[in-house]
Length: 246
Image 1 (cartoon, rainbow, N blue to C red):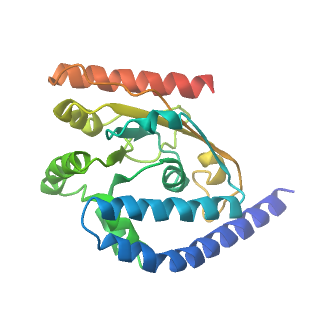
Image 2: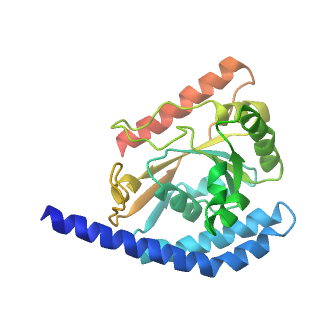
């Protein structure tokens, strides 16, 4: 029966990909038009359209998204949202789940992707990880996002977690941003996206419900290097324990 499961997984992957392309083409024009608005209205309207897109797309591919902790977004102040990263479906999930305008930090090379790259660069602070100057520029760009009242979404593990551990070690970027701006970290934990796109399998996908839990915000208690490391350790421990409990 393994061959049948593999066949069905590839048929499902084909369906999900074709549906993504078709819906993306429908959304391209309105999302491009709102991106021409002055900041920060452009990203607010852009992400509102993105949420509407994912609210249609995710049920159609039989991957409903269930949210907990949305009440933490009642504050009008922007958060630095830090999220675990298990598969490419995490991007779809956060677009669906974050109930406000947000930008993420992403690879610059993806802006060259046909059609998708047009959307990608609007909602992303782009970084070339091979260029030290590009990495330096991201911090003031992310500060500007927060100053405009827009949430900043970061995946502190850097790349997808393909280990058998709940989390990989965190990079410092999100926590430097927090201590230098005084803005709180809002941890977010995603479950089950790895079951949809298992690591190490090419063009293979299976439908599954997704859960995303937003946890209480964690505020920086100072702006020193030690304060940054303590904040990082606290957020890591909070997310690790929540994953293990659920």
